[in-house]
Image 1 (cartoon, rainbow, N blue to C red):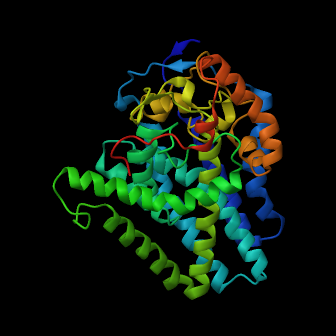
Image 2 (image 1 turned 90 degrees about the vertical axis):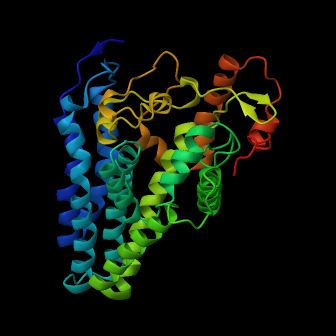
Length: 375
């Protein structure tokens, strides 16, 4: 693998190609609606097949001053997404003469966009030290009614990935649909307990104003209120539907990223440190452009603050997916096919990294002791 200067920023702006597709779907409906998921789920994997993998590693010590256009892309998305979501609600409730099922289909396409692009950008933003960037991340998550994800991701997922404490580490043999229900049920409570524990360590009560759940609630209420102001209860319904689609997209990605990968249990609720072997990676070129290098996921867990253009590939150390995330998330919707493809890869991973562990039943059931004091 070669280490190079940062790549050009313009290819990452491929995500903006969703914008004209959404606008055409809102304005014309019909087959334009199908263009949105087809672009993300079909066209991008085809481009991956044609353009192959990218194994280059930019210099991770590149200064932020050299990354302006990469950062500008993530800053620009919030107003664009707000225009697409709220402009779409207003148009669909005031001007469009589509039947209701077609209006829902338009919002499905918008939800694919807010999930595929918006949540990925929010994830990049709330990992950064800038208060303005973290606020942009919060605004994007409020627009999909999933604000607690920031807490769950930073305070639970990163420290506890690959352990039973982490809600979004998919267990071996766990189908996506069961995983999705479990995450929706357990995630908000897990995030609340993490914030409560952090406040308690500072000697503060759970309902203190520093608890970000106040901000999460206010932003989500504002997002719903704006949808109501623009489209009444129909607008709220359309808004909530796109939010659900976006969250479904997010949790499909979470499912793929760590499926069946576990950290060694050291006893007494302790686990080995996170390593590059605890995330499924993909070096497919075009889907990494679309997802701003989210598929270089192992390096993100090793260096959570590293900006997306500088993330490294650990092709020799991390387990590799056979394709990029878009086809893998589609496959995850069919659990028997998913297991047929991925379970042998998990078993091979176990033999490679943990040949001494012969009984995986406790890991598989998620019944090992959680870290002391967690949740």
